[in-house]
Length: 90
Image (tube, rainbow, N blue to C red; front, side, top):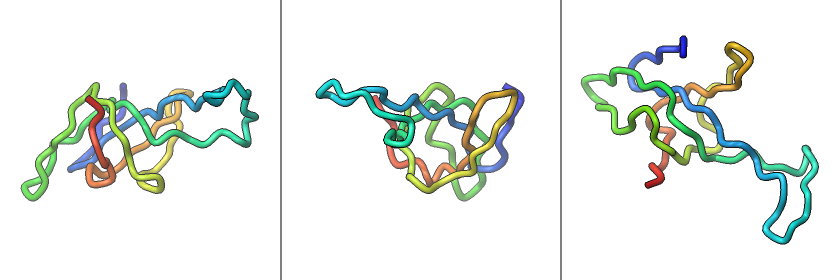
C-alpha cells in the first residue's frame, strides 16, 4: 500500500455490499446500502493527545458520514480520523 496516513488517521477499505437479503431477494445496485464495516489497511503514528487504538488488520465499524473517499491504484479507500471509528469487531 502506498498511502501513509498522518496524525491520528487511518486508511480503511469498505467491506463489499450484500447482493442478497436474508430472505433471498437479489438487490439492485441502487438498493444496496454501503456497509459501515471495513478493514484497517494503514494507521498513522497518532498524536500526543490521541494515541492509536486500532491496528492494521482490525475489522471496524465506522461513522456513516465520516472520512474522505478516494480512489488509488484502481481501488476505493477511505481516509478518516480515528475518532470516526465507532468499534472494533472481535
